[in-house]
Length: 285
Ligand code: G4P
Image (cartoon, rainbow, N blue to C red; front, side):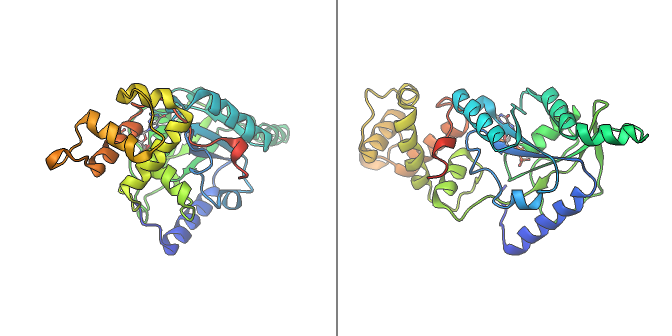
């Protein structure tokens, strides 16, 4: 589902999260492990600054494992507690509860020392659309109680979901907007399917993705499409993939839209293998 993020929607989203922050101890910030920088909300640090935060790299099953390790180190270096998970398969669920508890340990210990009764840690999951918030809530809740998809503007009564004895989650996640002012960020988000009905040109997005894969994951690309070699000329590369997959128009001409669609569909489905678009070392650039 595509959300139109007008300034009014952004202000409302921010307001809704700020309201929820009053009730919680920990913010669980969910990002896509394939693009941990681009899948963060640009104002997240400001919006949730005063709460302990757990950074969770989701969809780790689709990301390059070496890069995921690098990203975790990078975030830890910045002072975040960070873990990687696969919400779809339910991997890393225990770590979420343990890490959340860890984040408030000092505060809770002090309260307990003062005689306050111990209670579960209350958490809110936040993130941009499509990072897997609903999937994660459903997995933690162990049944399908969270709605999938995002409905900005629809407010429902707030409910807590118990995750074992020590964690409680708000049932609706905080939905924030992505960074779209940067063309490259937009292309990465579109390539992974975070922006589905892309306002970006499909061929442009596929060109970006193919160039990136050709440079960083050439073997995977070659194997998936049965290419003898990877042409440095992007049109030739398109032609070769289009030809091999029968994306043709009348007269045997390559159908570039169809080829772009096919490449992106396979990339998003993980059929071209695991990849990570962003390297923390290159972040400053
Ligand atoms: P959101 O609430 O943050 O908007 O995201 P949501 O949970 O709706 O998840 C977006 C898509 O990402 C879903 O796929 C979901 O299955 C997938 N997903 C979530 N977590 C993971 C993960 O750890 N690994 C992988 N590989 N995929 C994940 P979809 O195609 O939009 O829907 P569906 O096919 O699951 O119905």
